[in-house]
Image (tube, rainbow, N blue to C red; front, side, top):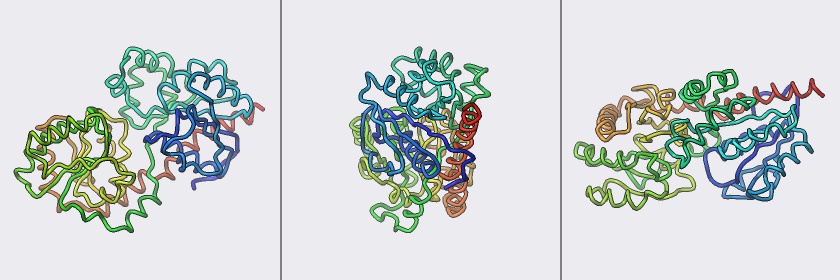
Length: 374
């Protein structure tokens, strides 16, 4: 897949583990795709995880032993294999590698992928001051900083203007084969006339606000249901809210699903109600399936993806009134949505091939530089 390489040098991707997560899936997809043309390693701090079976046989896996000595093991592997690039996407790993960059060979580029906005990191972290310092004083030492949106770029350049030339925006890509498989399947017929969201059941996702808004919406659209697919720490709290609003028949906690896409395909709308988000993979997958998206745009970069009244509907903030207004507006215009257009546009704009080629451009740059210096 993608264009051929001008030169071939090893690349090492570093992951905390192969546990389920959007960032981990992106890295595994990337490693698998480029392993056809160069030597690729995935270095795991903790061996294995639920995504273990997704790594193909062409990718060599390196066990970094434990969370206590992983950095020293990784540095040893770097000197052994002499990669042109070292790639990381987890904040703790990013910070450690940037602090230890002086121990790496000068020929090895350190590519940092940050999937979460500064605002989101500050909101989630138990030590926001530490994250602020890392972003401001360590991230500028990255050879390239890969971000997911212009919103994230603006945040980082405001925090540290000198980092701007090192930033490369690469949106996540959706696996076309996975989408094509779902297109050939019949949509789930368990529910009819429903909205859906697929996410962790956490405060960040704004599900409490969405449920409050939907309580008003169902008065106008009593036949509609809201499906919440996922699991998380807020599950019981959300269950209690659903009960207190007498929404048991309208709002369903579906639970975690290995493959929620058949259910997503049958939805009238996908809803992104997050208080903050890097770039929602579930949203991109929904669009590729032709499902229009209702999204909060503040701190989510959704306005860089959604075409208002064409591929979905946007609301400024995560509040019950705002979500109620946009849900009613969207449901009133449901017949004007062209799902074929949405699918064709999204599959082109957010293709895995496009993402892989953007990363190849970054890797080529450093592989060629390393080749000149040998």
